[in-house]
Amino acid sequence: MKHHLPLPLPKGASLPALILLGMSLSVVLGPLLFPSSYDLPGALTYSPPTLAHPCGTDLNGRDLLLRILNGGRISLLVGICGATISLLIGTTYGLIAGSARGSIDNSMMRVVDVLYSVPRLIFILIFINAFNERLQVAANNHGWEWLVGSSRLVILILSLGVIEWLTMARIVRGQTLTLRERSYVAAARVLGEGYWTILWRHLLPNLAGIVLVYLTLAIPSVIIDEAFLSFLGLGVQAPQSSWGSLLAEGAASINPLKGAWWMLLFPSIVLLTTLLALYSVGDSLRRSIGAKNR
Amino acid sequence: MLRRLASLPVVLLCVVTITFFLIRLSPGGPFDSERKLPAAIEQQLLSKYKLDGPIIRQYTSYLGDLIHGDLRLSTKYRNRSVNEILAQTLPVTLTLGATALLIAITAGVWLGAFAASRPGCLAEGGALAVTLLSISLPSFVLGPLLILLFSIKLAWLPVGGWGTPQQLLLPAVTLAIPYAAVIARLLHDSLRETLAEDFVRTARAKGLSEYAVVYRHALRVAILPVVSYLGPLAANLLTGSIVVETIFHIPGAGGFFVNSILNRDGFLLGGVVIVYCLLLMLFNLLVDLSYRFLDRRIQG
Image 1 (tube, helix red, strand yellow):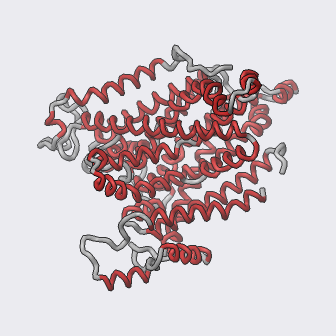
Image 2 (cartoon, one colour; image 1 turned 180 degrees about the vertical axis):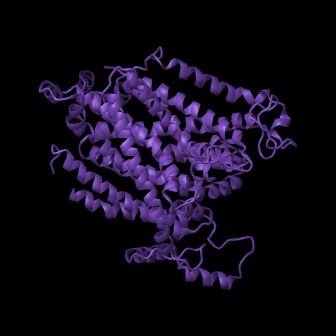
Image 3 (cartoon, one colour; image 1 turned 60 degrees about the vertical axis):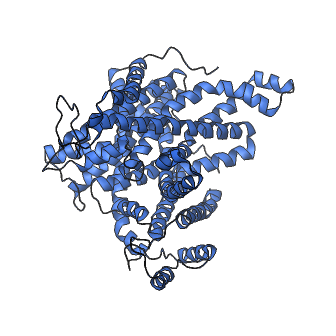
């Protein structure tokens, strides 16, 4: 049973996939269509949705739709990069554990179990805030201009990649355990192929399908983690904004006296739609290759 | 089982060590501010809070204090000990977490069983769609939206605060919903598998009612993946309660946690993390025990 990526997409995945495509395109290209004044503080503060500002404006009179699109660039970037890092770590870890078997496998999986039940996000929070300044100092000393402004983002992506690899490791390990008993692997061993050759040429290609499926499920998890941190004001920080920090602003601007509901509603809808689309694509891919929930 | 019990102090020691060095080795001290303090005063402060001397000495003395159950003083909330702060805030967080846990399990199990006992039916598809929607509704999206709807537009429930059951309802539901959905999906998948097994066919052949088959026979086996999910669930709930406490202005440990990061309040931060981890590990031990009790097939 080879796990190829099922193409064409399984039934029920094409609509969410289209939504995702549209979302990515508008996030990447959309901001280019706006007049530059829309991103600057303006006189029209806290305006409800109008024709000129379809999602209203924020506290400083900036156009909310443009801010949502710009925030989406950050959120999706963090999600994709973070999930890719988690994929690399999880696949390597799972491959090693699954192909080593025995006591190495046992202790490696024990570590995964412990990490599952520790509040990892809390450690990451401390880590990000402890090392951001350090990284900035290092960037300044080495003259890495690009890193100075986005050190927080870089460290955020790295750390989120480091916490979401557990599920991937479990899945890959389980899959490796069954794959390594296949006759073609046994044949390769008999032919005298080395450990790494077998891993690289026989196991990895057959894991690609299931790994890609779990990648689509890891992206929304990383996006949620990032939004969680940014919501608390401990993730992406001004002048950059992500969907999480926009939601925090939205949550702060609803009160009985002056309910700027659009500040909360539109970022919520966009985040919800994206997460829902990602989860449904991932879920139907997962079902179509017959993998279990965890 | 004994091995797990023995590994508990090791993991806890790792947690303490990582937390301590993450905090102490990051640049900037707890007394840095706009105005530089005179050196003598700073020295006195550092020695009062046991932050002077070589880092290894600080670490060992901190470990010594921890063994005696002393989480030290907070460097921000002067003259209040971390023990005191936690004694006030932890019950709040735990009440919220326990309520959410209860809601998540009850709602999740019910919805999962509901969906799985109607295979191929519109109700199953509908229930699964609801769970997918709920998983995509993290608490920081759901919470403010619920406030907007129930507290501001309808004015049925208070917007926040702590003390009355009405004030507990909205935050607990906010915290529970995504995890209820995860439980429902887990249970649905495992119940579908269990319902195809032989002992279920036997139970049906005996003429038992569908209710008895699903709830009294199949559920007992199918619940196991849910039980093993309880450990990670508790960790997620504790993490999630940080954001829910912020949204609903609940005076729990989560708010102190966020502030202690911003204020570089090392011992408070360490105290919260250590107590959280200790609680989670004890909870995991309980889950393990109950798992063994539920599933007699596991020996040892």
